Image 1: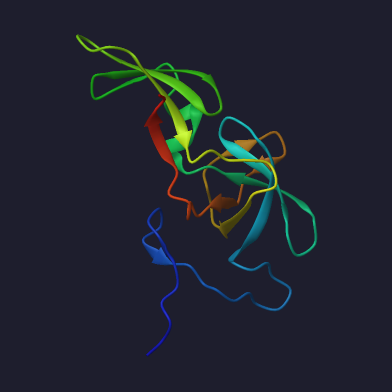
Image 2 (image 1 turned 180 degrees about the horizontal axis):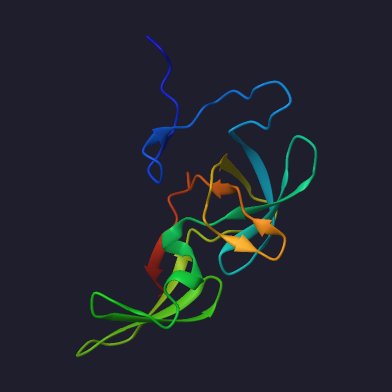
Length: 138
């Protein structure tokens, strides 16, 4: 039986675990340096080279800030806090949980994230093995 590799729902394909000679691995470890609205500034654990890693789509500020989705309006105050509002309901402050933190190791995968910054297209994404999501702040 062949080993099963992680599945990438954005492409509908399985992610390769090996890299071709001279090519970067398709999945690897990185350490977080800081958090931006849509991505994380990290470095590869293998060579300490800086790399930008896209957050999962549901956690990106640019896709939801100031928009109303299914009757819920979202307004962000920073990269990890937002207020969700719906007619007839109390406003709800939400945080990314568990939170990202500097020095944390994450598993990242190589793919077209569709996210562009001043340096170009971000080609690494957070595999989100910590199952981060928005949750109501207490």
